[in-house]
Image (cartoon, rainbow, N blue to C red; front, side, top):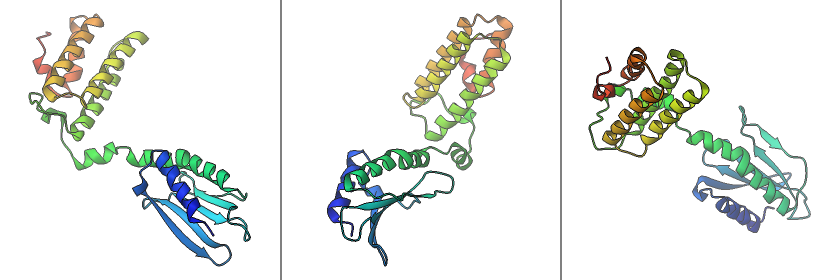
Length: 228
């Protein structure tokens, strides 16, 4: 039998490691050959931690199985027997390892799905409004700015230091979409675009190309001073 004091201790482990207790379920099942088996499941997912009695004459010896975060979600069948402290260490390792990787993947934003369900163009963003960007707008700007990184490296002969400077500023603009309003972001973006063009010491023709990279993605460059 799996004692309540043992499953209660595992519940404490879940809480102490910073996980939400409401995301877990304990199911006690009966096996004709092993007696009671305890199964801890994360939400309605394939991720499970199984606790079996390891000795028919003792309540403090266990064997364990647990789901691995691998393509087919295989169950790792551990043949060894453990006391409760050893079992608890294995459970902690599973929480911090396979289960944490599964949760991280589940919580990752699916940009492909988001864009498909919320189609719009960057040109449709009104940068004159004093309001935060929506999640969809943040995604579109991120994709557009990431594309600019590639376009800059392809269209200009820059050294490693210059490329790093451009990428750092673009990364800042991506992060700023989560922190500032649209109108404030526009001012920051214009400043960064102008500063970057100056820092790269671009001649008139290359400055025109540089500004053109941004104009292909959104209409913000209409607020830039004439460059031709």
